[in-house]
Length: 178
Image (tube, rainbow, N blue to C red; front, side, top):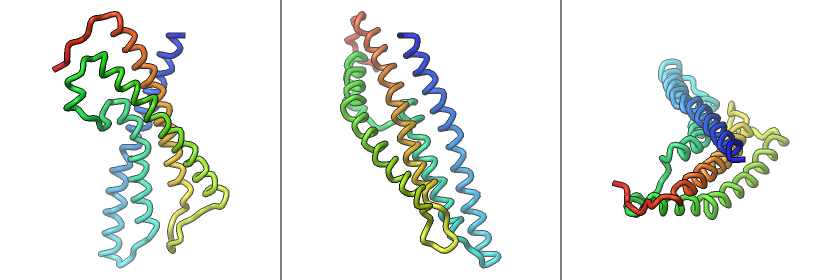
């Protein structure tokens, strides 16, 4: 069972890192779309709501699809002033507690709500009210898939945290890391 859990955690980490790195390229695309839109507006006098909406689609993709990668790399927000004073074991307990009692309920709720939000938009074929605008359901789908990734990464972090805590339980690690 231990091997299965650790292999599953590694697979989730690999998937979310791959998706995060791929989605990060959307920043470059957003810059290109923005530049092309500005050039077409200033040189040709032509602009498009679709290009403007594509920019925020790309930004939304980066934000939603890189969140799990951010959690995986431990780059999420925390209060380092307090955390630095704790022993490794205490930090693991605090992290595990936060993941189970705060992060999971939030992610589960957002998964439930965003699935309905996305599905309704797909069924209705929801599109932008702006002339030349894009379909809206793909952007709403990014919200759902971002939270799905975050839920999987939550599971991976809980698995890894539980094993680290188990390994620290046998040691006397009461010293505070620098």
